Length: 203
Ligand SMILES: CC(C)(COP(=O)(O)OP(=O)(O)OC[C@H]1O[C@@H](n2cnc3c(N)ncnc32)[C@H](O)[C@@H]1OP(=O)(O)O)[C@@H](O)C(=O)NCCC(=O)NCCS
Image (cartoon, rainbow, N blue to C red; front, top):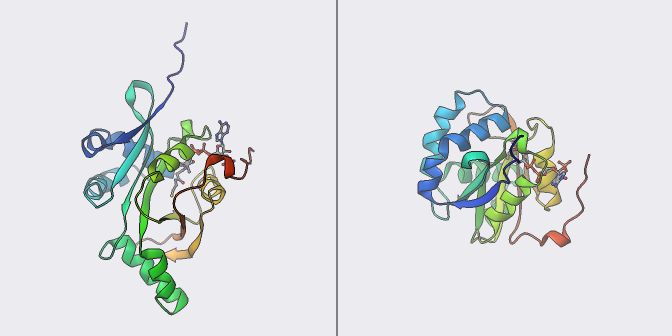
């Protein structure tokens, strides 16, 4: 007789727990994004450094043996941060003035990472992470960047963000040192209640 599958549980991770689960979380990230394994080593120190930024918070789904099967984290964006400066540069180039850039960038939470292991996708876990991370994020807007040409299955991240009303802030943006085009998307916080969202488009 086989054991019943473990119901994943959604948890908020403090810094120590984040560090303890870091290798599993990065494994989910590398697998979900289809990145080479070597990416994991570079990301480790960056993710740990992010955990000390103002407004940092992290959530995860833990599955069998309390291993991470989905993870998301972010922090308050602000001047001097690499991502902030890259997006500001893009907005200024786009509009020729800093006015709209300042509006988006004035008071935002950066959703830095959101990933669910491919074997656990399409069960609502990604949506659960998004809601849990942004509930009480302490800023009036959320911004994120996502590849224009997403990993398989194509479009899943995009559908999630669009369903939640994320709008285009930048398209085809080129971050320094990365040849791939990215979109920067954003919306106001808090997120709408589930009952007010458009229905899923199950495929
Ligand atoms: C983007 C990502 C985090 C979403 O996670 P997820 O757990 O697959 O997302 P959800 O399950 O909440 O929603 C995805 C799909 O599942 C469907 N779904 C949700 N709950 C469901 C359920 N109970 N039964 C059946 N289908 C369901 C949704 O309708 C949605 O379908 P759609 O994509 O056809 O619209 C995940 O797909 C991922 O890690 N992708 C690769 C990495 C990536 O692109 N990350 C974002 C980079 S910024």
